[in-house]
Each structure stands twice: as C-alpha cells, then as structure tokens.
Length: 269
Ligand SMILES: NC(=O)c1ccc[n+]([C@@H]2O[C@H](COP(=O)([O-])OP(=O)(O)OC[C@H]3O[C@@H](n4cnc5c(N)ncnc54)[C@H](OP(=O)(O)O)[C@@H]3O)[C@@H](O)[C@H]2O)c1
Image (cartoon, rainbow, N blue to C red; front, side, top):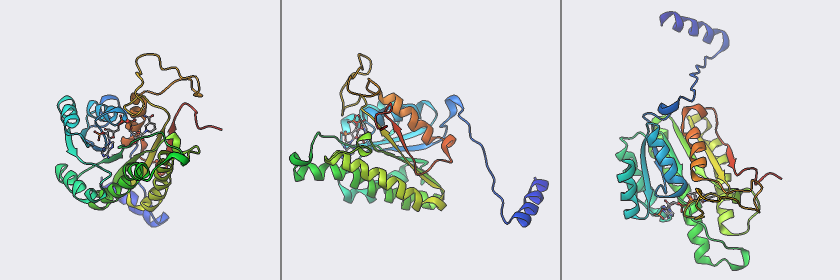
C-alpha cells in the first residue's frame, strides 16, 4: 500500500496528476447490488420493468406515481418503496425529493425520470389544457425534480447518475406537444451533463421507439408486427429496461451526455 502511494506520489510530481481507474464489468446477478434507484412513474410499462430488473439484480427501488392503489400493488409484488407524487405539480418537487432523500438515508445512486404521458395531438388541434398537461408532466416536472435531486442529494454526495426517458418523437420532427416535450428532454440531458461534468454526476437519456405499455397497449407476447416501422415490430418494455440497467450500472460509468436511441433504427435517415 505504502509502496503504491509513493509510486503515485512520484508520478504526481512527474506528471502533475494521478488518475485512478477501477474497471467495472458486467457481472450477472449482482450487477446492481446495493444500488438505490428512484424511478418516477414505476407502476406500469417501462418504469415498472426497470424496477423489476433492478430488484432482481440486487438493487433497492423507490417508485413514484399518482395512483396509490397501483403503487401499493407494485410494492407488494416487488417489495419496493413507494411515493405518491404527481410530477406535473411543480410545487411538489422540493418536498417530495426531500421525502425520497430521507427514505434512502441521503443516498440515491440513480434517479430515473420516467413518468410521462402521451396524447396524439398536432399543431392545429392542440388546446392549451393538453399542451400544459403534457409539458408539465414530461418536461417541466422532470426539470424541477432533477434539480432538487441534484441539489439535495447528488451534489452533497459528490456523485450521481440521472437517466431521462426521452423518445424517438423528440428526435424526429413532431409538431405536437409530446414530441416537443421530448425534444426538450434531449436538449436538457445534454446541457445538464455538461453543467455537471466536473461534479461526478452523469446524465444520459434513452429514446425508445413504439413500446408496449399503457401508452401503447399492444400485447408484446402476441403478434408484435407493425408494417409501417423500419424494424417491422414494436418494442417490449423489457428491452428498454435492459438498456436502462446498463446505464444504472457502473459498467457505463464513462458515459454522460448521451441519448441512446432504442428504436430498431426508426430514427435513422
Ligand atoms: N411506450 C412508448 O411507446 C414510449 C416510447 C418512447 C418513450 N416513452 C416514454 O417512456 C416513459 C414511460 O411510459 P410508458 O410507455 O411505460 O407508459 P405507461 O405504462 O403509461 O407508464 C407511465 C408511468 O408514468 C406515471 N405517470 C404518468 N403521469 C404521471 C404524473 N403526472 N406524475 C407521476 N407519475 C406519472 C404512470 O403512473 P400513474 O398514471 O399511476 O401516475 C406510469 O407509472 C414516458 O416518459 C414515455 O413518454 C414511451
């Protein structure tokens, strides 16, 4: 140990700095052992599948949602923590994150901004109420919740990991509020990653294509063929959850500011 310290000290004098690297590798069942993961909107679809995988891989999960019955059902099934929180109520960001930080003894490893809603709306038929509802849930809520998590936990801990649920709708042109909210999420992901670069807090996003969930209630155990998609099929929430697992794990510790498209090439030009 002393020998190593002297060696590093000599290197420090010679090079002006020393950087240590601990290589993390994907290691089966224990990949997320001990990780504390918060998932907004974890009662169904992609968020639920992520929660399930985190628990299976040894992590501890807290999910949020608006519906206490659904939350209680998942709590019973996954043995996870729950918190009733309507993310579109922007005033709640501070007190709800305070509760989360308390529930996890000040230590959260990963915050996943997954809660989101969809409605098929275009430029000429979008009313103000729909616009505000979608923006407050998908973008504004995510913005303020993330800031609270950064300030109340990650900056204090000197480390953090944030994952945003964007969408392919935010990559390719879309004049409805859903696509615009997700384009905002993508822009925010890159900007925040840059802002937090030297604070050991990484920020990445997933941009799924059409995925089986409550938003798209297509049974992924039956025929998932979809003619108009490049990949000719819808995606399973489990597939998206697998990529989230990689981002939660330390195997992705050198990745920040990235938006991972998981859409079977749908957004390729
Ligand atoms: N499915 C797709 O094709 C697809 C594609 C690209 C991106 N995405 C994104 O993936 C994320 C998850 O969606 P999903 O497809 O898994 O849909 P989902 O099954 O409807 O799940 C959405 C989750 O968000 C929660 N939620 C909705 N509004 C909320 C609010 N105001 N406050 C707190 N929680 C709220 C829901 O719970 P409660 O209703 O009980 O509150 C639910 O747990 C969303 O951000 C969505 O935009 C989905």
